Length: 213
Image 1 (cartoon, rainbow, N blue to C red):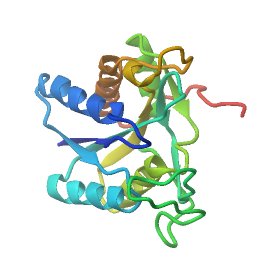
Image 2: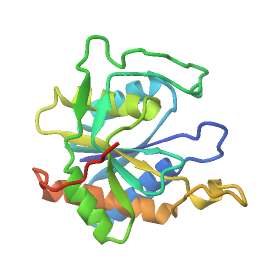
Image 3: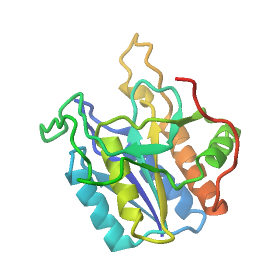
Image 4: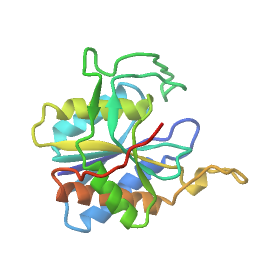
């Protein structure tokens, strides 16, 4: 079983391309004969982790790819690391705005993705979709969910997971704005490529995909 997640709209937006991409990727992968479910998570600290945990318990997936929106980025970001820190620059959808709080009390400082992010980078790029390995998932609900996922998977031997950020979709960008965007169809294909690559690679490739800052 493969689990894909996306988020409800937040920050005044009417939609969230992360959820749309997860739903479309589910359709693509089901068409290839894979068992895939998609779950929409609330953009709320704590509640997102709870909903994800319930999905893990109900579905017992072997592979989990969580997807979130990173407005302002110009490519699909394959997140490498989740940190044990909630530090919200804006309130979540319930009005919560934690500052310098642990995601998990006394949890490790960080978890690395267990997806083959560098192999996926090559595969997504080969598919003609701009992509990068990202060294930060931020400190908002996306990182909160990514950390909660990896903390949960630490006690589930054999299960792997990670997080992918996607840009705005074109409909979110106001006329005249220079903000980058990407069609949801491209985001969905990228998520599908990440899943295919993860199923094909139990270990990652060794290639340079870091950053200088």
